Image 1 (cartoon, rainbow, N blue to C red):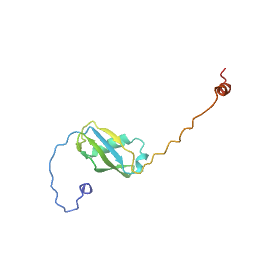
Image 2: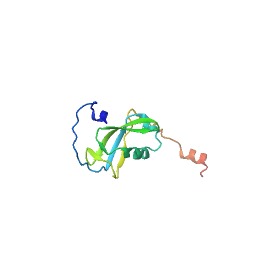
Image 3: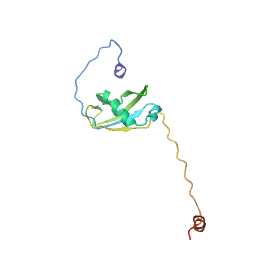
Image 4: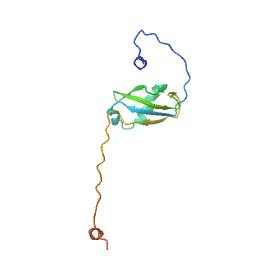
Length: 125
């Protein structure tokens, strides 16, 4: 928590009580390619997000999965920049992990053939 708040031990902290709207949407960006090793990321995040009370846009949250700490950038939340995620119906979306490069699809080469050739090879009369 201290890292998230960017404070050091012994620092003075001012606390205000606010009421946040319930979250309807969140988009998270995994900060490592290790995210791709999770077989069911929605299920994992559903369990891990229960440990949080709120999400704020541009925060980085950390979750534990298979003895690894995975970090996620909160890219977007709705209906405001800070939302409560307790007892809400959250639509969760993921961006591509940091460092992920999509493999290019090989360009398909058009197949050219004569209709007569096709009919002979397939057995069409």
